[in-house]
Image (cartoon, rainbow, N blue to C red; front, side):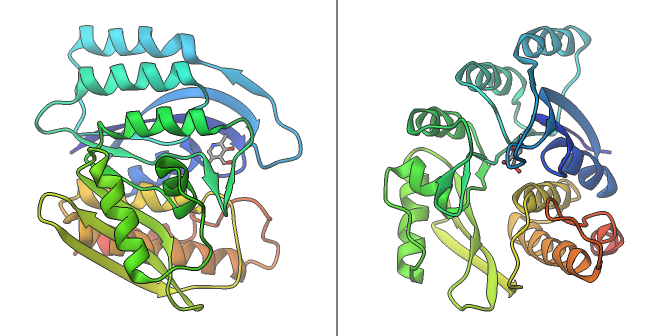
Length: 277
Ligand code: PXL
């Protein structure tokens, strides 16, 4: 069984970061170790939240893993709350990355043209530095725009997306996948560029006219789970697009659905089924 570690916050209510990554990657059949970076009452899109920083725990936890000889097949990072955490996670990756370790970095900091609360261009620049450790980064177009210092565009064509992807990998990143991309109003998916092979890959599925929080975390977790189960990056991204759509369909189908988070739970059988093949 493969073992990964995911480094991000735990938001007690809100269905994002660790409360999504842990169940999804576990359901994919992959041991999921966690390194919680902060405990929040709720994620930062709620009108009110508490934030207890766990930065001081990162180094002692990493040192203990090292002393115990614990290793990981993948390191997956998501929401990180401070410059110091970015530094510590950079050190963590450098220490625990071996030849067999895949590093997935989701530079969580913005969406729909706007930075999340508490983030700045300087933070985006430092996150970009962290991304240079990655085998695959999974930004949305807003995050990629901050990484590249380019204005966010709501409308774009395929040439524009390819150009953004090449510029991201020119920063020294092997593979970049832009999430939440669509060229038709009723389609959404992912666009990947591999700077080693110089190949592009894209995959789209149905886009529903709804917006829910946490879908980026659902997507990245499903992609990593699938990749750890032996699928190629492209195949893993297909599974992640289809699974994320299924979570949104399950959310919409629940007449009591909440406005935060998606119903990834009832969609898990579909993910498990897809990974059997
Ligand atoms: O889903 C990304 C995310 C993760 N963690 C926290 C967040 C957000 C997005 O707002 O606030 C705490």
